[in-house]
Structure formats: structure tokens, C-alpha cells
Image (tube, rainbow, N blue to C red; front, side, top):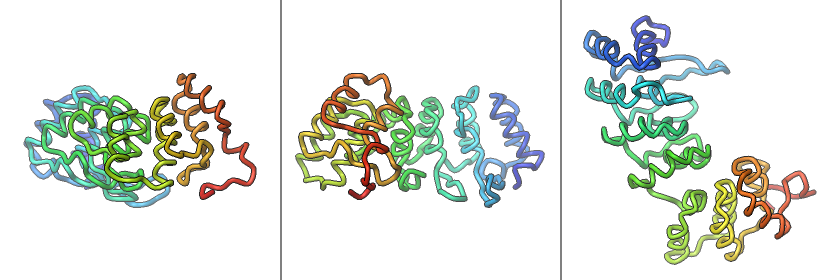
Length: 251
């Protein structure tokens, strides 16, 4: 079904406006709508398709009565773990996590969504991978509260010191993992976690392999209010990537 189809367009309009009654009427009149794939093209002309649950969770999120729209769609047979078809394969939960929409996130989890579903645009990871990478802190902490599995990177980014320490107690992370976790802690503005990782050998000037940014760059961009962390980093000789002549992400 095309996004331009009148029925699909009416359903999208109902979701964006929080008109759950109209959405339910459309679902009753068109039983296949709940599981339909709405086909479209991306800005670069590639084919893609999403479901109406993706529409509820789409950027910028927080549409009126989003949780009720999720409930209506699930009651009509929507697949709560349906995958986006295109450049990635994210579920609606990935999208809710990416726009900090905790109400929709909760509704999806209440309906049985896989909290650790893979397929994120961030390294093929889970919804928590998206939430931490995009600094959607309310969604990230809610996912953890509801049982999401944390990696060393996501635990460090959220400053979950007990989980970070547990990674070192049960295994010995390699240098790349430690450096990545340190970068994440700085991205999240987590001073104590950054200090812990530095004590375990993290490189304060490691340029991330996923973008040309050092831990200091990450802090200044995402957590500029973390003044104590910024002072501490600079006191240890931290520099922006542009100040590291000759450094590459692998060095």
C-alpha cells in the first residue's frame, strides 16, 4: 500500500492528530490496514516501507494519544515487532527510543515488543543503542528500567557504574572496548564513569572509529553543561580531533 493511498493517508493523519476514534474506524473498515506496509521512497530515491506502528513512533514522536494509537493498532492485529524495510530494519520500538517517546515506548513494551530487538541504525544494535547514541536519556533509562540488556558502552554512556564494574569483574574488556566506553561516558556527561575507565587505561584522545570526534568533542557537543567533566578532560590533556595532527580513528 502506498503512503499516498487515501486510506493510508487518512490513518497517518488520524495518528498524527491523536484521533484514535477515527483510527479505530479505519481499522474496522479495512482489516488489513493494521499489518499493511506503507511504501514510499527516501530522499535519495530508494524504496522503503513502514507500518502504522512505525508512524506512531516516527520522529519527532510524542503525537497526541500515541499510546492509545499503539493499543488500537495492536488490538487490530498489528505486528509489534514489524521491521522497517529499507536501509535499516528497525522496529517501532527503535523509533520510539530514538525520539525519547517514553509513552509510546511503554505501550509497545506492554504489547510485547522485543526490548532487545537487533537492527538499529547504530551498529545494528538494540533500541537502547539508538537511545544512547542519540542522547535520548529518558527513553534510555526507561529501557534499562524495563529490562534492556546493557553493553559496556551503553552502561558507561548512562553512568551505570555498577554495570560497568560488573563487565570488568566478569571479563577483561579489550582496549577498543574500554576506549569506546570512555567515549560513551563523555558523550553522556558521566564524570565518575569516565574517571573509572581512565583508571583502566582509556585513551582520553582516542578518535572514535565511527566519526572524527574525540571524547572531548563528544562532551562539548552532547553534554556541554558537564563542566566538571570538561575541566577534568582538559586537565588530562584531552583535545578536539582537529587538534590531534596526524591522528586517525585507528591510532
